[in-house]
Amino acid sequence: MLTKNLSPLQAVLMFAALVVVLFPVFWILMTAIKPPTDWNASPAIWFPSEPTLVNFKTLFDPDALGEYGVGGVSQPATKAVFGSILATFVATALSVTIGLFSAIGISRYGNGSKATPLVILSGRMFPPAAIAVPFVIIFSNIGLIDSYVGLICIYVAVTLPFSTWMIKSFVDDLPREIEEAAMIDGRSKLMAHLTVTIPLIKGGLFATTMFIFILNWSEFMFALVLSYTSVSTIPVQLAKYVTATAGTLYGVQAALAVLAMVPLVIVGYLIQSHLARGMTFGAIKQ
Amino acid sequence: MRIVRPGGLSNAAIARLFTLPGQVVSLLVLVMPLLVALYMSFTDWSPTHGSLFDASFVSFENYSELLVWDTRFTYAVVRTLLISIVCLCLEFTFGLGLAVLFLRKFRGKSLLFSAFLTPMMILPVVVGYIFWMLFQSNGPINQILEFLFGPQAALEWFRSAPTAIFAVILTEVWHWTPLFFLILLSGLNSIPENPIRAAIILGASPRQVFWRVVMPMLKPVITVAFVIRAMEIIKLFDEVFMLTRGGPGSSTETISLYIYKLAFNDFQLAYGAAAAFLVLLGSLMLVHLLLAPVRDQLLEGNR
Image (cartoon, rainbow over all chains, first blue to last red; front, side):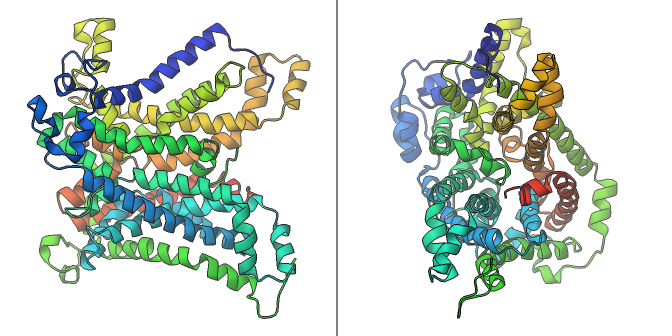
C-alpha cells in the first residue's frame, strides 16, 4: 500500500482509541491492588492510596483481609485455579492431538465431500445453552456431572472444530511432495506423517495449542452448569464472588479477574500473528 | 500421485482411521445429547418427575407454547438479532477505521498493534466483570459523565432497559472490535498495489480509490469477518450474564440466557430443550445462509 505519514488529526484519533481500549484494563489492574478502603469509594479512586497485594493473598487465604477489619471471601479460589489448570491443560492436549489426526486426514485424504467440514463448522454456531441442557441430563445419569472427566469431554468436543481447522490450514500450506518423497523412500504413510508432516508444522501446532488453551481457559457456560461442589474453574468462581453477599469485595474479585486474564494476554501476544487464522478457521492467513 | 505400498493402507482407510477419533468425540458429545434433547422436548419431563422414560408424551405442546404464547422467547430472539446487528456494524466501522489508520507510517506501530488487540485476548467473563465495575453508579464512567456534563448526568446503568442494553452493546463492541481490526488489516495489507497505482495515475481521488478499488477487493475478507463474528455473537451469554443477568426484568435477555434460565433456574428442562431445538434449527438455517458466500473460502480456499 502506498504509505503516507499519520496526519495530526489521525494521530489524535488513534490516541483516543488507545485510551478507550486500555482504560478498562487499567481499571481492573488498579482495582486489584486497591486496599479495602478504596474499593467502593465514592467518587471512585483511580489510583490506589496504598497499593497492596492483599487481594491476591485473600484468594488463597480468606482471612488475609483481617488486618483491614474486613471479612474475607467465603471460599478460597485455590480449587478453582487448580480446576482451571487441570481441565484446560488436559482438554487442550486432547483436542490438539485428535485435531491433528483429523486435520491430516481431511487435508491429505479428504474425499472431496463437503459435508463433514460443514457439520464441524455448524457445530460451532449452536448456542452452548442449547447443548448444555441434554449434557446435564445425560451426565447426571452416568455420574459425570460435577466431575473433571465430564468437563474435559465437553471442552474437547467444543474446541475440536477450531483445532482441526487451524491445523488443517497449516497442513494445507505444506507441499504434498515432501511427504510423498518420504513414502517413496519406503516409509509407511503413518510414519511419513509422524516423521515428516508433524515436525514441519511444529510452529503451527504450537500456535494451535496456545489458541485452544485460550478457548478452554475462557469457557464459562458449560463449567457453570456442570459444576456444583467438587469441580470449579476460575470463571465460575468469579461469577460466584460477584453474586455472593460478598458482591462488594471489588478488590478480591478484581484480583481473581487479573489472575484469569494475565496468562491469556501473554499467550495471546505470543501467537498474535496466528490469531486471525485461528479465529477464522484458517480462512485468513497472515 | 498415488503410492500404494505392499501391506500399506489405502487412502480411504487412512482417511477413516485419522478422522475416526474426532468423529467419535463429535458423535458422543454432540450428536447423542441432541437426540436425547429432541426426545425430551416432546415430553413434559422435569427433574422432579423421576426418570426421563416415565415422562408423558405431549407431542408439539412445548413447541406451540414457545412459538405462539411465549413472548419472552420471541423478544429474546428479536433482541439477540438486533444486538448482533448493531454490534457487528459498530465493530466493522471502528475496526475498518483503525485498520486504515494502520496503513499509515508511524513510530511504535507493532507495539500499538499489540495494544489494540488486547481486548480480544481477555476472557468474556472478565470483560463482563470489568464493564460491570465501570458502569457501577459510583464507577468511573459516571464519574467522567459528571465531570463533563454536571452531576445530573450520572446514570443507574443497570436499572433501566435502554441503558442496560447500551452497556451490553458497548461491552461487546469494546471486546470484539479488535477482531475486525485484525482481519481487515490483514486483508488490506494483502491487496496488490498495482490497481491502486493505476487508479491514481488515471486521476482517481483517494476517496474514489478507497471505495472503488480497495473496498471491492476487500469484500471477501469483510464477508469472512462478518460471518465469523455473527456465528459467535448469536451465542452471546458470558458478558450479559456478568453485566445484567438479563435484567432489569428480562429486558436484556439473549437467547442463550433465556434458555439457561429456563433450564437451570426454573428447571423446565423439557421446555428448555424445545427452545434449544428451535434455536438449533434457526441457527442451522442461519449458518448455511451465512456460510454460503464464504463456503469455498473456508473449505477449499486454503489451497
